[in-house]
View 1 (spheres, helix red, strand yellow):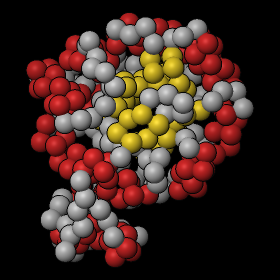
View 2 (view 1 turned 90 degrees about the vertical axis):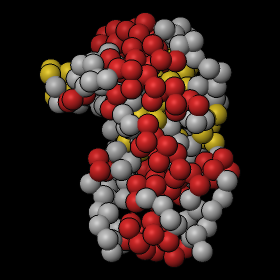
View 3 (view 1 turned 60 degrees about the horizontal axis):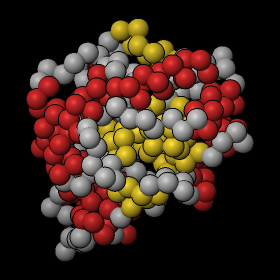
View 4 (view 1 turned 90 degrees about the horizontal axis):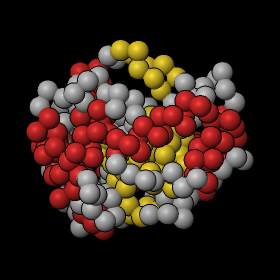
Length: 288
């Protein structure tokens, strides 16, 4: 018999340091831009509807970045949702530049981070971004200098809390010596479990772990007979819902942010919160 629980009970919440509490299933806003994460979406009205539907369904954490578009994702979020409802956290990131569609270059110099944070504040129509994350480590710049720039912005009241992304355990340790780090955002999913040790570190330190590519960009094996498909059948669910439920089960600090431009996929993703995986399911998925 499939194990079910109330969506809100399983979804629960996670606290961003000493700051706001958010539900444990957010929305990644990279996919609301055009192809190659470049330029406007093909259907802006559909994106506006998607963002508003997410709020209606109880999502209160949206992850974006100045580089998504670039600037397009943040602009659309503000257009759809400003003035923002109480309790909504819109997190942004800085540290990438965009030479063109599908192309990314790292720039985490302090002067760049200060400039792009100001741009994000303007596009999001905010005086303060509650969670602002270093998008990537620039190996031309000590991570202490990059995080130090964010710490300066925090002291100025322009950001509330600091996170880091695409980091190793050693880089996280260095960042934590400069400022309080409340979130880590690395790739993690059933197919890519390379951040397992880092998740354990975050769990012990009550640092929120935000797995990007939680569905492995659609590359998870969902064919009939695959472990993911078997578990989905037991729960009368879809494979993508089980993949997200597995993430929620992995750690209490896990905050998946599946991205989509489809309302149907949004609602399917949210349905993952009602799936309670049992020991048999987890054993099956260990082989996924």
